[in-house]
Length: 146
Image (cartoon, rainbow, N blue to C red):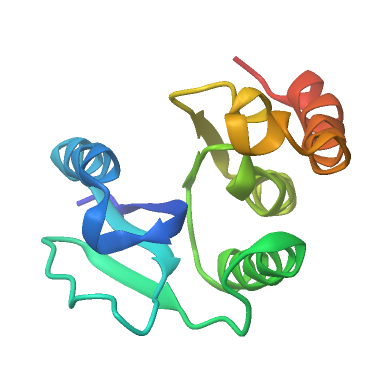
């Protein structure tokens, strides 16, 4: 019997409220992957019960640059120490850690986004922050394989 393929799906939001990602994880399970969904937990977060494994990071920061930096560092370390054949980065805010870990581990990387992240209103009104995310896009996108 072949070894189970392991997939880790990364999001920056609270796992309890993301139905789109829940459907993605369900499809991966149906395809035979052992799935782990990684996100964050907030003080008011409800418990999460899923058919697949979940991991919720407690972070010191809840928003802004320090949140994204802390989350990506934690995610990168988590990905490095776990066996994984498939990494799914949901949106640009998880892509830096997922991209680096996939490269180092030789795992396949899927980038799943439902919007142009750098065009969301929260970033359009903040040109400096938007340029940082555009920098990640310019660095990573040409290196992604289709």
